[in-house]
Image (cartoon, rainbow, N blue to C red; front, side, top):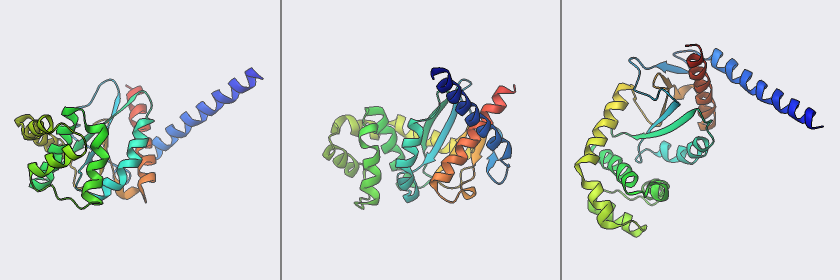
Length: 214
């Protein structure tokens, strides 16, 4: 019985791998993904998936719970990173600083989803840094620690670098997903977020196959 279970498990794994390879082979440039040229800087170890987003984007807000669950289950050879972008909009630049400040103070895991909730459900505008800090304090953050991080020069530099990375990836809207620094998943190829993540899985399989071929 143990041998049978082991055989069935091995068959299942082989079938999954074959399916991923097949999906990767069926992908079409221009339809399912766009090539990023020159490629973005990416890890030589793991295949990196980058989500370009903004707290100000309602689609990103809807997408956040799904991609968070998806990212938590990625294979060990895949890493996930998020990049907030502003598209040179001052109000979105502040939202990018919120993300980086939460990350710097260790409050991101606790307040990440709450920022989306505040903006899109509670209709908070965060027009000033003072309003942002007051909100963060109401959610349990250390006001001085968070305020100092939000106003620091390093946060502004991070916002600029994030926008530069988005420009290099030729991001025209968010959410947007880049894989291995070389492939930009085309949102229009999917009918919904679930399909978009399945398509991203296929692009990851393509990146894995290309790496194995080197």
